[in-house]
Length: 154
Ligand SMILES: [Zn+2]
View 1 (tube, rainbow, N blue to C red):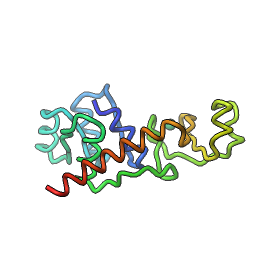
View 2: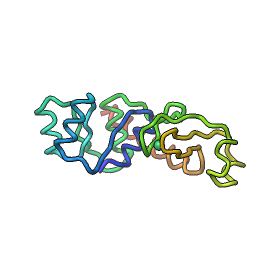
View 3: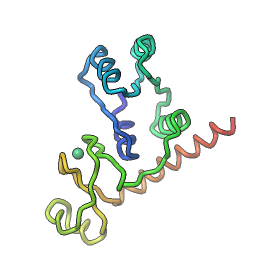
View 4: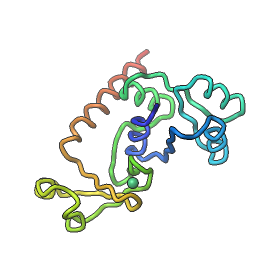
Protein backbone atom coordinates (compact mmCIF):
# COMPACT_ATOMS: atom_id res chain seq x y z
CA UNK A 1 0.00 0.00 0.00
CA UNK A 2 1.35 3.36 -1.00
CA UNK A 3 -1.19 5.63 0.69
CA UNK A 4 1.44 7.53 2.66
CA UNK A 5 3.64 7.99 -0.38
CA UNK A 6 0.61 9.31 -2.26
CA UNK A 7 0.12 12.00 0.37
CA UNK A 8 3.77 12.99 0.14
CA UNK A 9 3.66 13.24 -3.64
CA UNK A 10 0.53 15.40 -3.49
CA UNK A 11 2.09 17.67 -0.87
CA UNK A 12 5.11 18.06 -3.17
CA UNK A 13 2.71 19.19 -5.90
CA UNK A 14 2.35 16.04 -8.01
CA UNK A 15 -0.95 14.99 -9.53
CA UNK A 16 -1.39 11.57 -7.91
CA UNK A 17 -4.29 9.13 -7.98
CA UNK A 18 -4.63 6.40 -5.40
CA UNK A 19 -7.10 3.64 -4.82
CA UNK A 20 -7.24 0.42 -2.86
CA UNK A 21 -10.52 -0.57 -4.49
CA UNK A 22 -9.64 -0.82 -8.16
CA UNK A 23 -8.70 -4.10 -9.79
CA UNK A 24 -5.39 -4.48 -11.61
CA UNK A 25 -7.22 -4.27 -14.93
CA UNK A 26 -8.86 -0.98 -13.90
CA UNK A 27 -5.56 0.45 -12.62
CA UNK A 28 -3.83 -0.38 -15.88
CA UNK A 29 -6.69 1.11 -17.91
CA UNK A 30 -6.56 4.39 -15.96
CA UNK A 31 -2.76 4.62 -16.21
CA UNK A 32 -2.98 4.14 -19.96
CA UNK A 33 -5.96 6.43 -20.57
CA UNK A 34 -4.66 9.28 -18.40
CA UNK A 35 -1.02 8.76 -19.37
CA UNK A 36 0.01 8.22 -15.76
CA UNK A 37 3.04 6.51 -14.31
CA UNK A 38 1.95 3.49 -12.29
CA UNK A 39 3.70 3.23 -8.93
CA UNK A 40 3.29 -0.12 -7.25
CA UNK A 41 4.69 -2.54 -4.69
CA UNK A 42 3.11 -5.41 -6.59
CA UNK A 43 5.73 -7.00 -8.83
CA UNK A 44 3.17 -8.93 -10.91
CA UNK A 45 1.20 -5.72 -11.57
CA UNK A 46 4.42 -3.89 -12.46
CA UNK A 47 5.29 -6.61 -14.97
CA UNK A 48 1.79 -6.58 -16.49
CA UNK A 49 2.02 -2.82 -16.92
CA UNK A 50 5.41 -2.82 -18.62
CA UNK A 51 4.33 -5.72 -20.86
CA UNK A 52 1.45 -3.53 -22.06
CA UNK A 53 3.74 -0.57 -22.66
CA UNK A 54 2.42 1.36 -19.65
CA UNK A 55 5.05 3.27 -17.77
CA UNK A 56 5.44 1.78 -14.33
CA UNK A 57 7.79 1.94 -11.41
CA UNK A 58 8.27 -0.77 -8.80
CA UNK A 59 8.74 0.89 -5.40
CA UNK A 60 11.40 -0.91 -3.41
CA UNK A 61 11.88 1.13 -0.24
CA UNK A 62 10.18 0.10 2.97
CA UNK A 63 10.13 3.46 4.75
CA UNK A 64 8.89 6.85 3.56
CA UNK A 65 12.39 8.40 3.44
CA UNK A 66 13.65 5.44 1.40
CA UNK A 67 10.72 5.66 -1.01
CA UNK A 68 11.01 9.44 -1.38
CA UNK A 69 14.75 9.13 -2.03
CA UNK A 70 14.30 6.48 -4.74
CA UNK A 71 11.54 8.45 -6.49
CA UNK A 72 13.63 11.59 -6.33
CA UNK A 73 16.59 9.75 -7.85
CA UNK A 74 14.49 8.12 -10.57
CA UNK A 75 12.21 11.00 -11.54
CA UNK A 76 14.21 14.05 -10.42
CA UNK A 77 11.50 14.93 -7.93
CA UNK A 78 12.44 17.79 -5.66
CA UNK A 79 12.27 16.80 -2.00
CA UNK A 80 10.63 20.03 -1.00
CA UNK A 81 7.14 21.16 -0.04
CA UNK A 82 5.84 24.55 -1.08
CA UNK A 83 2.22 24.76 0.04
CA UNK A 84 1.46 27.30 -2.67
CA UNK A 85 2.07 24.46 -5.15
CA UNK A 86 0.74 21.57 -3.07
CA UNK A 87 -2.22 19.39 -3.79
CA UNK A 88 -4.56 18.26 -1.05
CA UNK A 89 -3.05 15.07 0.45
CA UNK A 90 -6.57 13.73 0.92
CA UNK A 91 -8.13 14.38 -2.49
CA UNK A 92 -5.46 15.66 -4.94
CA UNK A 93 -7.05 19.10 -5.53
CA UNK A 94 -4.76 22.15 -5.78
CA UNK A 95 -4.66 23.99 -2.44
CA UNK A 96 -5.59 27.65 -2.17
CA UNK A 97 -4.24 30.23 0.24
CA UNK A 98 -6.97 31.42 2.63
CA UNK A 99 -7.14 34.44 4.89
CA UNK A 100 -7.16 33.71 8.63
CA UNK A 101 -10.65 35.11 9.08
CA UNK A 102 -12.09 32.52 6.72
CA UNK A 103 -10.98 29.56 8.79
CA UNK A 104 -12.06 30.83 12.21
CA UNK A 105 -14.10 28.01 13.74
CA UNK A 106 -12.46 25.39 11.51
CA UNK A 107 -9.23 25.12 13.51
CA UNK A 108 -8.44 25.42 17.22
CA UNK A 109 -8.22 28.90 18.70
CA UNK A 110 -4.54 28.40 19.58
CA UNK A 111 -3.74 27.54 15.99
CA UNK A 112 -5.22 30.85 14.91
CA UNK A 113 -3.11 32.65 17.48
CA UNK A 114 0.20 31.01 16.63
CA UNK A 115 0.03 30.70 12.84
CA UNK A 116 -0.65 33.22 10.12
CA UNK A 117 -0.58 31.35 6.85
CA UNK A 118 -3.30 28.87 5.98
CA UNK A 119 -4.33 26.92 2.92
CA UNK A 120 -7.49 25.05 2.27
CA UNK A 121 -8.76 22.52 -0.19
CA UNK A 122 -11.55 23.96 -2.34
CA UNK A 123 -12.85 20.42 -2.89
CA UNK A 124 -12.92 18.69 0.51
CA UNK A 125 -12.53 21.74 2.75
CA UNK A 126 -9.48 20.45 4.67
CA UNK A 127 -7.35 23.25 6.18
CA UNK A 128 -3.53 23.15 6.23
CA UNK A 129 -0.84 25.15 8.01
CA UNK A 130 2.80 24.67 8.94
CA UNK A 131 2.08 23.64 12.52
CA UNK A 132 3.94 21.49 15.03
CA UNK A 133 3.64 18.45 12.76
CA UNK A 134 5.82 20.30 10.25
CA UNK A 135 8.90 19.37 12.29
CA UNK A 136 8.24 15.71 11.48
CA UNK A 137 7.63 16.51 7.80
CA UNK A 138 10.94 18.40 7.59
CA UNK A 139 12.87 15.61 9.31
CA UNK A 140 11.40 12.97 6.96
CA UNK A 141 12.40 15.09 3.94
CA UNK A 142 15.85 15.63 5.44
CA UNK A 143 16.28 11.89 5.96
CA UNK A 144 15.19 11.28 2.36
CA UNK A 145 17.74 13.85 1.11
CA UNK A 146 20.51 12.15 3.07
CA UNK A 147 19.59 8.79 1.53
CA UNK A 148 19.49 10.42 -1.88
CA UNK A 149 22.97 11.89 -1.28
CA UNK A 150 24.26 8.39 -0.54
CA UNK A 151 22.64 7.05 -3.70
CA UNK A 152 24.42 9.70 -5.75
CA UNK A 153 27.80 8.92 -4.22
CA UNK A 154 27.58 5.26 -5.21
ZN1 LIG B 1 -9.08 17.93 -0.45
